[in-house]
Image (tube, rainbow, N blue to C red; front, side):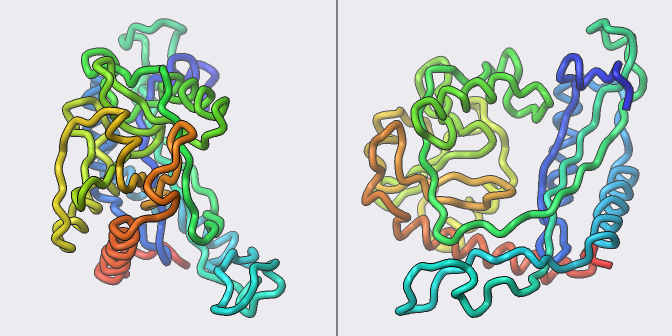
Amino acid sequence: MSVFDRSFHFGDSVYEVFRTYNGVPFGLEEHLQRLKRSAALACFKTFPSTDFLLNMIKATCKAFFQKFGNTSEHFQVEPPERGQSEGSNAERPNAGKATKSDVYVRVTVSRGFGDLNIDTDYASDPYPLVFVKELTARPPNEVMKYAVVTRHRNLVSALDPALKSGNYLNNILALEEAKAQGAQDAIFLNYQGFVTEGTTNNIFIVKNGEVWSAPLSIGILAGITREFIIKACKKEKIPFQDRLFTPQELFLADEVFMSSSIKELLPVVEVSGRKIGLGKAGPITKKLQKNLRKLIEDYCVRNKEMSLYV
């Protein structure tokens, strides 16, 4: 990698992040399609072929599994058995056993490298980089605490949030503001004061049995997991709406949850220090978590030949 890489100097790159389940890269086709859309929005003049990117992803993941194996010896974080008190992993019968290892995959395509000039005529051809790391077990019954921040989501007419670019300073500063309030992540408003999304995730609220999410047109990323959750709502006959909503509606929601490719679907139990609903995962959140997990399992069974285990 050159020190003249434009992604380093200007954040001039596009990227995607996804994960594997039992070695199967989940939603790979959808992520690569979105990567190409981001490149088009970023006015990339040329772009690596899908086959080239696929071969890089497969080779990098296979190299990881070849070196580290298909299983992990990390201690698992598992819920205690019924009637068993909370305790260390060593006190649990399945703790510490080897489990299937899965990976976090990040595909970045830089516009290229060249003279320190923002003019793209000075850039080389784009080039990709695939980064892989092991996913560690997530704690059971994980919940999230968010804060609505004063920093606004980028205008669609400025740096469109639909463009998944390496320019992340707005998100970084929003996260710092949220952390200063004791939260784990930030919720952006747009310039009109409507709720958009988190720094790396989509936000949903539940009100009177309906699930709401901000419409794509307001300036949010078209989340891959978001689309699977919409499918889960349809399957469970839960009404879903793309609609605008305010911070006040967010605070008064019956339930709030977030979605991302790595964290899947997690309940949000507090926003800006205010308890949401009963302060724990609500019934619709739990139902969608279960249904999303089933959709993921079915996807991986249908696509088991795509497993990158060696």
